Length: 626
Image 1 (cartoon, rainbow, N blue to C red):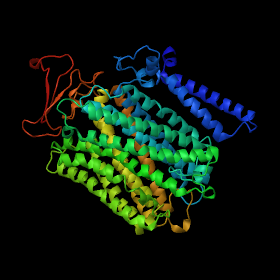
Image 2: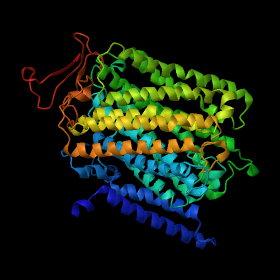
Image 3: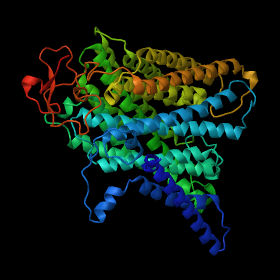
Image 4: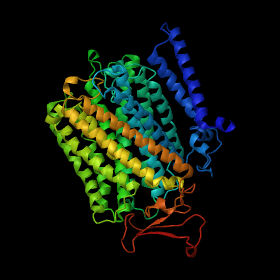
């Protein structure tokens, strides 16, 4: 019981609830004193949340080190812990490996909840007519599914980058360890806010939150906006940390073109997070101020313009797709050479293509607004830039294919997920072309074609690569192997379930099935195909159940893993599994490419293991061709 009460998370929740209650009570007192009705949901809830979140952060310990410094107590060196007990994961710990696991665990929990929401919604649309959900409830479930899944992807991206990048570049930790812990812990109240959104009335706007619907939606809309803000704040702070770490903390000899491709994609992701996240923050701040104070940013009667929101929203939200996708593409670039036993083809072009995708993806947002009434002269430039983004993306796909060509391919579980990711992402890219061409987009916009395309992009760009990453790096994180039989069952169910769920959606969209609706005309004859889609969605859910069973069982009693079960060359695999508290006792010396598989004499780095033994006793590890 004493251990439970000492958990930072529990202290934070108690402090946050108390702070929220105090903030709401004070606001109601002030409103009454000024002659207004005491209860006004938007204003009272906003004030309570603005007090409750700092109280929660104080309770969880996110301010402890900084507050001690202000009081003149000095700051303890990060990484003072030397144990890996479970309690570390429920408090503000500055170790990047702890934070990476916290992010990933939270991401998986949110994915599970969001998936349940959509499974309920799919039952409603499996046949024409209203089955058991009202349109408002259906729209709330669908909207929450979308925003929670996107939030989960952001959390997963931060988790992978946090855990892997310092290890891959030979660093002791992140550049700003305490800021790193703060960046994670501000996402936890965002999860709670999203969970409370449905009981608070939900919102029927879709995940995009377009006004005027978002300015008039129930209280759940406001909770979503606040949650979005917290995750966005975490994303910006994380991006600063990633950028500083990669640019300033690489091991001796690791020039930019000796970095693993995953680090390149993390660098491009950090650029997108820092530059573009504030635009969507401004957009939702305007919505919040219109809801709470009655301002007219998007109210035409007050001189506002709803298209302003869409420009600001998509100026972030299309680059955000690459925040989700780039790390996933980096995972594929790490796995394909290892399981093909060949060097990564066109390494320099693949590295630079990440920034090509980021820069090109930043100037295509207008294709989301072809049907919204934007100026006609803007359509053609946005159509052209949308087509051009395929060039740097194609560089990666051709690199993977060329790397596998004549390679000694091993179809282990990580490689199976990576191969499926390539196929799914390719379909997502090809089906995005009609969305970027004005005449075809006018027909398929807001149909199930867009749903299918978007899910191909996210599953191929993040979900399947994330599964590949978990199976690949799980031995490094836990020292145990995931069960291969269950892993391949997971892959088979998920792959079949995905294609049977989303390929028919292209047909549904072309035949008049609009997205974000609870009911549709039975005369269209779409019921049987929707039934197939709904059944297949439950197959994906079954695959995830297999995955969670495998994850828990293997972490508990899985087969012990050697330090480098895949014979990889990157630096993280030259350490023990799990890695030591401070990663590398002395900085490794990087000598060459991380992908020199099969090249005689190729050496990536010289690593001194813990203990400082001499070379005759194996003290120097040479990461050779493999």
